Amino acid sequence: MTALFDALQNRRSTRRFLDKPIEKATLERILTSARRAPSGANLQPGFAYLLAGEPLTQLSDRLCEAFEQSDTRPEEYDYFPQPMPAYLKARQREVGYALYNSLGIARRDIPGRLAQHRRNFHFFDAPVGLVITIERAMGKGCYMDLGMFIQSIFLAAKGEGVDSCGIGALASYPHIIREQLSLPDNEVVVCGMALGYGDPSAPENQFETPRAPLDEYTRFLGF
Image 1 (cartoon, one colour):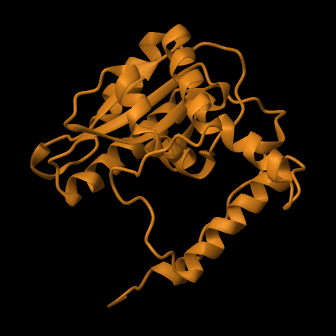
Image 2 (image 1 turned 45 degrees about the vertical axis):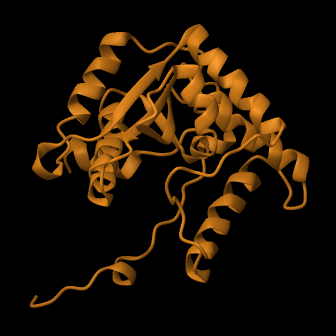
Image 3 (image 1 turned 180 degrees about the vertical axis):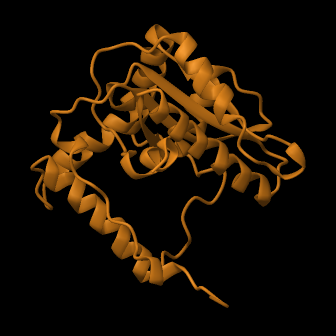
């Protein structure tokens, strides 16, 4: 099995990190490698804003304040289907229960769940936070290309021994992020990402999310 397959099999959403910085040269290799992701007509859509130190703290603090005040905005693109089909809702609930169970947070422990959700906006205390954007005029196909870029960041990070977690929750706070990062109006906030070195002792880093079996999403014809 190649290193790429190892990375695909072993990558996890890491939600607690060690207090250990990432060298800028490592981040440059990760982002440069990820840009090799395929894209239609080689448009290479999407931008990545990397934050560490005080800029990351300032953005995190503002996001947490907005979360506590329920100061959200409609997402600038449709992340989830509306309404959510029952089979997808079941997957969403399954992974949510697994995360909270790993932390000992009971199903009816609303304050505990809110406190855990708030950690999204502190990038799970990772040393590096990313904000991913795309130009507003891009078509739906470019979002597919952007997804391949994001996945390539995950895999390139894993190849460098760096752990990661996507943070879709940031899409509900485009007004905060746009102001804090001085983003141009023509860029849509797509998601965030946490990068760092995972804490191997953290229970939320131990559980593995299930994946659908092959025969549920694949059809082989002519084999």
